[in-house]
Image (cartoon, rainbow, N blue to C red; front, top):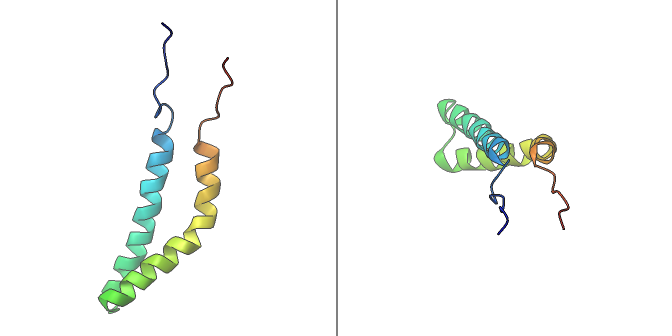
Length: 72
């Protein structure tokens, strides 16, 4: 038998970046709540900030995603 790599091997930095992405979007929404925005408005702020932050974070996710090795 040969040793099979774990399916999650190398993806820890991607997971950390994803949690950072959610934390930044959540911090923006919490900031909106502190400024007096309603709960529904804070949800919209969260969704909007997550959409705006998606473009720079996709580049980070792609850079951190491990490259597949072609093993035959």
